[in-house]
Length: 484
Image (cartoon, rainbow, N blue to C red; front, side, top):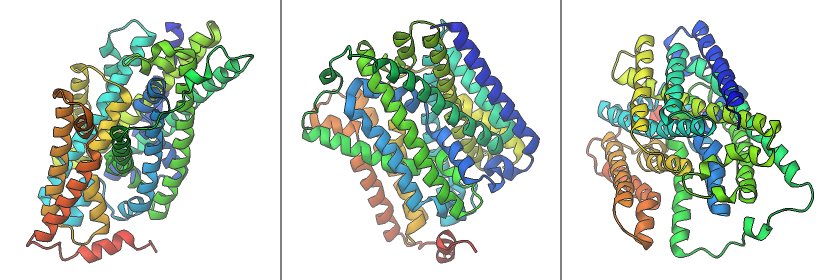
């Protein structure tokens, strides 16, 4: 690897990001500009931005590493990630846009007429967002450490400073432009090396045993079947509970645009997952020695120099480094802009100035966590966020959109139950020396925490003497009736 080329690639990305971000400062003036880009983002542009923020470090680096480690089992992650957007399309995209809200807590308060439910939702949203940012900062530290001899904290701080500055400067309107650009950069940064690598490996007889690279899968055990099913359930439903994904639909002009945006997103992220998974399969042929936890996430950056030892390999690596940093920046900025809207409205005055202050605060907290924690696998870290979101926020959002019987007490009880049960299971999995099916239940709790939280929401709502707000029927009609 040539650190000069890598440094130039990162510098060019930073310049492009800063130019686009601060250009948003010239056109972002109103509160609506900062929170939802004045609800004027068209489908293709919005889909590019959504794809840019959704395809995180866990996808750009971690997915290939996971395929390298586990082969076909790693494909469940992209299947779940992409299919989750189909559920968003079917159940929440258009209704949330028609709600007229700025943030998820806005929607919960408007739906349930409860300040307590809003505050609990805000706390859950912040936890989900911060849990999602930390792997991005770990990924930045990992990527910069691979290509340059610098301390791990440098990459994390670089990304955090850029994200805080962009979001504070231009809000949602500026972030939209940055994320859209970064999606196409990330796709190019992976697709071009994949094409070069495939051409190089297809020249002549293969130097590897296909039966070792693509082994015949054995039948799964009951524990494996449970773990896979629970994981897939978490990925499918967790997408609905990601605040930085949902807030983007508030930027669409109307419900029809929100649905169109979602369809385009499925195609965009599907194309990206195909390329990223292919990189992992190439890694199984070229770099099997990296199939070690902790090293597997570096396979994307290591492959070009192994196949092309000269200038071509160095240039392809530099392109991948730029794509990796685009992944960290795009996802982190999307999460921070969604969290800043929540903190600005719930803690401060909801003004542009408070939004900017909130953006800085929402970046500092996960940065501190990232600096004092050791990164684990990037995909598994992001997968944990999906489990938590699916257990705590998704049941309330789905029932809030589709069930008139939901009450504020039911929503609060469900969110608390889902968050506590999921968090306790994951902590116990990390600390307790358990094995077998019990270990799978704790490490992959979605299969029981999601039904548990949903049952609590429904049960408490039905037993609640405080019936749903009197205007529930009118509000639900607003969510579901097409715009005129």
